Length: 577
View 1 (spheres, one colour):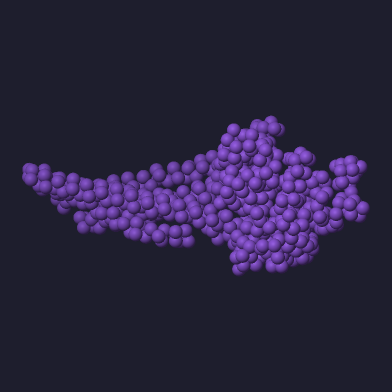
View 2 (cartoon, helix red, strand yellow):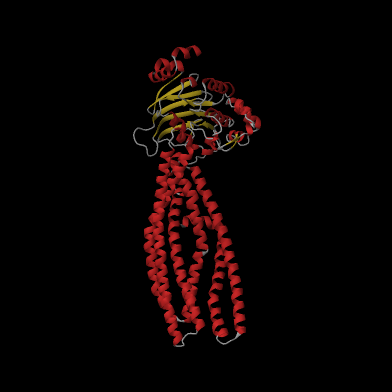
């Protein structure tokens, strides 16, 4: 908890003012029973109306001061808690942003959403509770006990006897509830993950008429959360009546003692009223503290989950070189890599390869052969297990991640567009790009034609994920986003799959003619998209099987020839060449 509470440091002045205001409120509340005692004993019993008016006026004044103290405490504690939550949420977001793909997959997206929203909200609530009720209850408890002792020490005996019973009840429940709180947060993770997966894949679900299957899966996750919530609620609900029973028994004993003392004329009626009020406040404060401890136990679970994210070691560390690579020469030396947690053969085995700046290189191979894995290592989405990768004769680990990735434009297999205009999405590659640069990139990507035909052109609004565009249109916008960046290295990972052969060929010709200085890397399934590359690299079971031109590989590579023959008639491609 202390690791989390360091985010409260900037708001220590607010945290000083909140308890101060609460102290004023509690002090004023503690004055009320004493003043009521004086009204009864000095005013009503003696027929002294002036004592009634004076003490009644004091009660109103103290009530007003207590109200101001309570409002001030609420204001200052709420401000501190809200700002604390904002800072904590931002820290979590920044930490998640620094994660490699491996760390993100370790937590899962649904769990990270739960931690950054639900767990932070729990911590925000606990800050408010600590600065308000966790201050009020102990102050009221201590003040009331002192005033009971001053009035009649014998009244403290039932309180002292009840305290260990209350403590035992609370501690026993906390031990049972703590694992339930953790289980509940994990169930919320599962609900979030299921919902996120279904919303992301809603088209696939509808295509395969799988609504009922997904309904059952979500219902199962939802019922698991409900079951844990009900079990947790039962434990909490059972505690309330037990605490109330102990409280009422203690107060009843106090009343018996007070009545006896009154009959012996050891206490006045007003003092009895005051003592019972103070005793009630003592017992209520004990019960309040008990419930706060329950909430504190839940907050500890949330704090642990937040700390897991904040303390997760980041596998990708920055190098010292802040200047991005300018040329684009790439070299792999004996690179091996296995995905974290994967079993079986490595995804890459001793890959050695040199890609010269300005060249067009294509990776071809069967699914799972290591094509995407190899290109993902260039921008350090993962770090190699063995070997080195160099860009412009410097190990990629020596660059800062910002410098390295600013030199790489990447178009991924799964196209992600964001809500906003088409121009906004293209400017993701270069936020300060001019309208002319945006249009130029779109023309190179063969996207200007369909964009210009839209009602609002480049200012057309896209829904989240770009679902208002076709697959081929989304791919071309994503390619334009990469091209506007004007980075020395362009990687296109099977990002022409939704384009027809004619559009694909036009796009590739544009890149060869107008972006000649690019180190252009493509990963493709279709031979027609790579047959003009300077070098084609054949991947097979994580190894580089062959390297050569289209004609060289047709003659020398069995794997390439089999892929070629399975896709296109040999004579047709030969005639096109």
